[in-house]
Length: 514
Image (cartoon, rainbow, N blue to C red; front, side, top):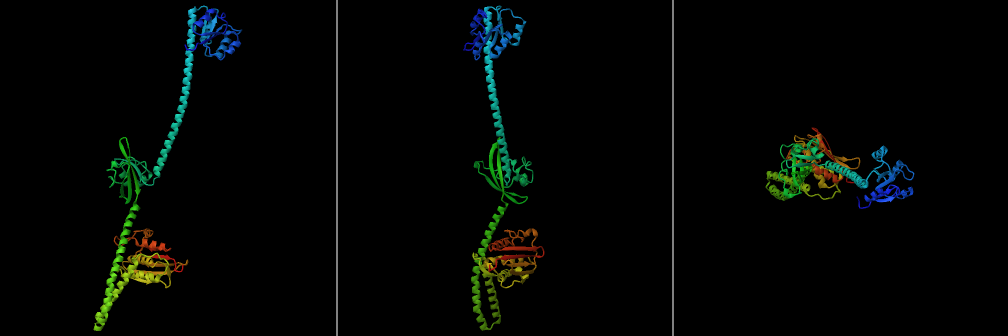
């Protein structure tokens, strides 16, 4: 029983159901309210009675109709039918079908009647509590369903975010153009990007599980200098760096090794490979260029020092010639003339070498006769032993002048003529020509009848340090430097060659009048 006193509606007067029934209701703990009309019942429609006690007929309403009306108005109330007779089969059927919950009458003693009514009140309280619990469980179930749907939505959204993040990570991983791998301490690849697969020449799905040194570089043992074997744990997140050489193709990779987090006790490492093959070549080229610059400075210094003793030789030769003439010694006179001639030749060579090695001024507006320029270039090269078997053919007309820097353009033609002489070790013809172009510029060409240049090498002749000569016979800088000089003059160099037939270099330059 609850703390609030339950109510029993009695659809008749106190005497209508019998004083015993009324007293039994009160004895069972309920508050009995008499309802003697339909209006009174309507006024109590908002109440929640525990019991509705009714006679077999009330206000001219039959039993069955009354039971239906009470069931509709007070669905939770326990319906008690009071009979002035013994119950028959129809009454018992009414109990069985739930039309009434209890049938009482004069056959019950006061105690039994009181107990039956108290039992109905308990049933009311029990059903009311069950209904309350059911409503609470239903509400909680609905809340759980809403929460579950919300959690499912959150899980789906989070799963979609994780899936999207995974795809973005994979796309970012594969978008890196340099090889990237995730390996363990045993050099086993656990993940790699497409650039790494491209280096290995295998499908990206085949690399996990293989060793990094075998899959990427075709080695049977770890790469020389690989820092993975002796990784310094004390350096934390600082990368270990080493240069790795792919011996199959000579490519050089700068390896940056980063320590990752331990996964189940196994340490993982991120290996980032950057192809520095061209960078390594450039480093060598810069070193070689610095060496050549030092050699050029040394050559200029030596030439300057040689110039002084040559002047002394010339001076003493010229002083000795009058003495020899006075003595009438013809042989001595001839010897002195040869010495003077050779000394003057040395002086011209030294002067040309000094002009060649001296830092050029930025002046580009001087008028330069191309015939004289190429003649000077041939003179400087003709002192080489290789030039003795070369036949010179000059076709340069007079008056073809270019605008530029004398020393720089002399350096260009010395380089080209030297290469032409070296291309004819068994002798041949060197043809120097010049002329004016239809567009108002001028050109000068150096043609040889040497061994020519292969087509696959023709596109590389102006690259720094590219040379077809044997080691020790050339640095590969001459044509590259010449190309830069001509470009700074606003001109261009063209090359034509046929293997076995010879090569022709044509230098186009602005005319002196432009």
